[in-house]
Amino acid sequence: MALTRRSFIAGVPALAGAGLLGCTAAVGERESATTGNVLYATRAAKAGSKSILVCMPDTRQTSEVWRGLSDELASEYELVALRAEGSNVSATIAGGIKRYQPSGLVLMNNPTVDGYRRLQAQAKSTAFPPSVIVMSSFLEGNQAKLRGATGISYEVPLITVVTNLRKLIATPIDRIGVVHRPSLAGFVRRQAALAGREQTAVVSEEVSQAPNSSEIKRALRRLKQRCDAIWVLNDDRLLTPRLLADGWLHGLNEPRWVPTIVGAASLVSPSQSFGTFAVLPDHTALGGQAASLLLDIADNGWQLPGSGAAQLPLSTTTTVDLSQAKERFALRPSALAQVDKVLER
Amino acid sequence: MGKLLVYLHVAVKQRAFQSLLGAGLPGVTTTAVGRLADFERGLQDSPDAVLTLPVVLAAQGLAPTLRGLARGSNEERYALVGAGMAPEAGKVGSVGALDILGREGTNRFVKRLVGQQARIERVTKIEDLLPLLQMQRVEAVVLPSRLVSDLRAASRLSLSERELVVTVGLPAASSVGAGGAAVLGAIGRMPRDVSKLLGVEEWR
Image (cartoon, rainbow over all chains, first blue to last red; front, side):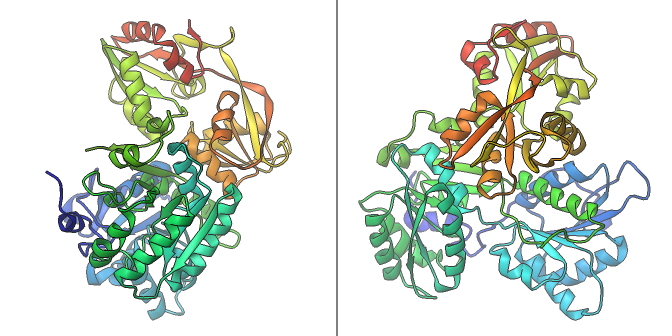
């Protein structure tokens, strides 16, 4: 049975009020419930190894990051993952640091980073171990407000998005349109500069800080006349239920058709033509990338190496709405071998 | 017929690779993995045979029973690829490579190819090599020469390549369980297009 527009929206976590990083039950091995907040723990092969404390909410995505982290680090370090959720995040992190005396920290998602920021603000003279942040949106700003922190951005860079889209769509993809609020203009500019290396031009339409549906529709109509694809930012303020129903879906589901690239799998559904193609971070690989950062920090005597600038995620997974893609666009013959997940009516 | 564990990196997604192997090896239960940790976990699951690079088999204390050949050789050439000037082994400062043997093993393996001076950045999929060049995280990436055309097709960067002198063993299989012989027999009869994806023309 086809979903109605409203039921589609209700099914999209971001739009149903759960945030773009909406969660499901965790999977994988876990410690006994008697250990309180401990979600996972590993023992290193060598006794007396240094420890790394991981603070994370309990979700499928974070457990995948944990898997990538622990596969890389568990033989050398004691790893402890604490559940950091709700109003006690700062206290959980503080307790974990006190108990496990970690050489390094891994912080997953925005509320965890916010909790750690509060903890650092309360203890200005305390020395904190170096930390690696993952799964935090628009990290550049957040990281700057923390001491001794580096990390990996959660947003898949446009250059990666376009590279993936070109493997799928047979027609040239040269100009990408993006709708953004003024506060994300800098982010879009940096992404455009990077994408320029792959001969990709970015055409942006700036809407107001709190746009209405008409602004979104107008921006999309303008972009669709000038661009080969639309890139939808993971900006909660642009993807509210009302804007999605009355702005985005109207604007996108009228000719001229152009592929729509989104950053959340839930925005690709064959029942409702919104995203043609989703490009998301590969969470297990993200854990591996975070582990490499920690190993570099360890090699540097547990100090952040170099500038400590945030990295971009290297590995992605892709999902395509094949029904929409076949109906509206010319696909490359090898397209389906280059996609991780294919959705079809 | 038996269970086969495959740990190889190819130019298609894992989903497509698994499906091609399933169709190409009728009667064999095939599991394709792309990360060393998954391969090591898969080995605990008692497969009858494993199919991977000889260097990976050696690291697990296994010997090849069936070897892939191309142009009469069981070794293949690798290439260094960079954006702009062709990178030179022995001089390149940072190299991106597939993580086939974990941190230390991969570092040793890649430094044998490109020189001890190189800092190695590991990735778990072939497609992740290109972002290393796009984001200027490394000066060059190293991969089998047969895959360079796929890298070029995916990018508009001005890529240059240089073939390396040291060669690397082509995929090989090892029998590790009771049904190993039957599984190796099926690999020997694998359709040409699936073998070609692995860089192999024939099995001996």
